[in-house]
Image 1 (tube, helix red, strand yellow):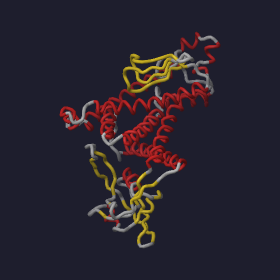
Image 2: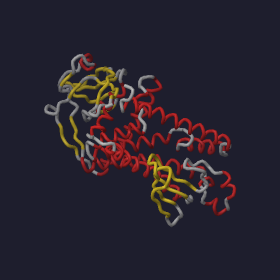
Image 3: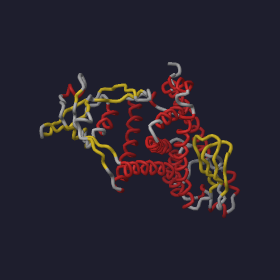
Length: 383
């Protein structure tokens, strides 16, 4: 109940959680929908509306192309509605499509070639990945990054590292084929692989040796009271004994680092999801809007740079979520288009309708489950 007690005590107001969350979500959603919009315009698709949020319109205007740009009352998503769509999920309005003139069909999304439709749909998630890359690259380029040599200055007693024979002064050069140049890279490799034996290539007295180490699963509490289950090996690098320095990045080097950071988040996400199916990870780590709002508020206390970095992470997550092959999401549409490209004809209208209904139920179920996790595990209710 710490979250609610903080609010009631006035130490951190409700708006301190909601406003940062809405700010980063609005930016991420805008870029996602902008990806759809730009590629649709490039393919000469007529667009009825570009909306950030759902529900009643708060602000809006019509552009010269007849598109209604609007900000809506429920700021938990957004959509681009093409000519011929029945709703914000781009479900085709078959009656309207049949009544279109030839001129209207030329601008209708559903009458475009399957490759064009697939490009428009894929552009949203791709825009999310591009946004994340640019945010990370901008951070590296303008702020640089502190780097610590991967030197072990202390081995924790009774740890996996001690059992494997790691000693102070060892330099970690590689873990399971992943080169280690920064001590902070070690937990990124080790954290998701608890219970899995990893080969550590270690430099000791000028010689390379290989030690097999199995990270132990540990519950760690962050500065905001969130519990994370990660693998650790039990090594420490103290700043006063290690070589800590600030690394500056050139433009292209920063872009490369931005791509690497984005790819890491994607890989980590799939590792976690794979861990759920194999039983290595728990579903109680999944978060919905409430949990993300809490995290946003917590991160906002660390400053603008941290909040912008969270926006990049959220952008990658939204891009990935939308690529899941669930009807009503972009990935579900892409599955339908893949079938159409292979079979030479679209899926039957009834099949698509049932698919969209199934997708809607599945998405609602996922949101309810994630919200339950947020209430129980993030906010501390019923604990």
